[in-house]
Image (tube, rainbow, N blue to C red):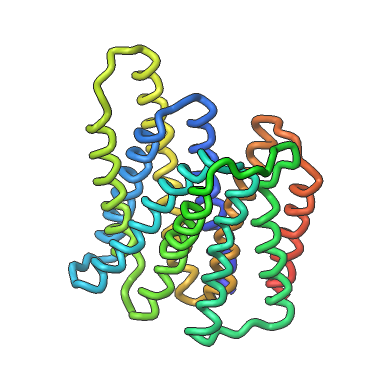
Length: 286
């Protein structure tokens, strides 16, 4: 199953992109400049891949697919960050990750995908792993603002457009690369405008934050491009009901690297999450 290896590699590379974003945050990089850099190198990556494949398209279905995917990625990230302002990360992150369940249900109901008992058990363990990894038992789980519920719901639906949109477009026989390209172009335009809207500052710290965010964003964009491109390829032959949750385990890659590099301690729940991850991957392969 070549698609299985490609899906696993997509999780690894996209997880590296997420980790580099974490590094930027740890070094107090500007979020706007980080995302500008990410969408810049990501867009260039898809542009070069399209040129290599000869898959450049400007038809309406491809443009609409790219627009929806871009909105899911860009607005999903923005609303997720706003949700974190009103609720705890250890509750917000796993609930947003339930968009994977929507993709699995959609693939089974709409496209008639069928899973064996082993595959069903494996996918269940992967979903549990994704939901458990962000939970911090030391963080208060109080919701400070009712806006959190609306932001959470909208972010979850938008992320399902990003992760599930490629399945829909490929079922329509639209190559994934141009769809991803247009989606990243939208994100690039959005954050170019966002950066230009920011007041110019001669403050040394502000310039340092902008430079830090941009550098780590450019690096993140390379691996974001690789992760999404590999995810697109895996969906060609692999069932979305398995490929999507495998791709979503990129959050565990971020956690593992944080443990190794920042010496973050693993909670009992996070340890269980890693066990579920490896058990789930084994069951899917049986």
